[in-house]
Amino acid sequence: MKNHKKQIAAAVLITIIFVLLFAGYALLYFALDELPLLLRILLGGLMTGFAVAMLFILRDRIREIRKGESDDLGNY
Image (cartoon, rainbow, N blue to C red; front, side, top):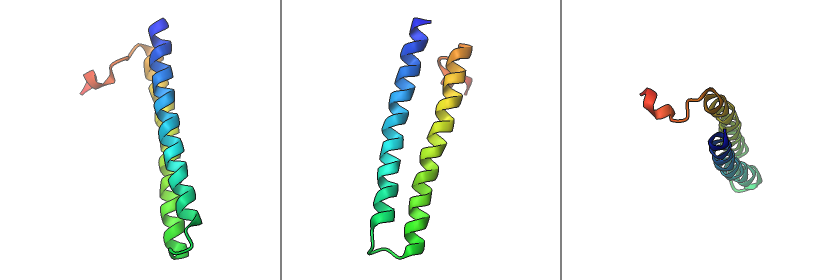
């Protein structure tokens, strides 16, 4: 169980880094006045979508870890 906590903590840390990165880019795209509005919305929305997708991936990964599938690459 102790190993599970480390694996979950690592997954959460990596997810936080990527979500912050994607959110930063989304804010940057929304704030750039030089780009056309449609392009800003498209790029910002894409980055926001990536951030949300990372959260769903984290949820699935935590479920896998708790089920005992610590090495999901072994399934492929």
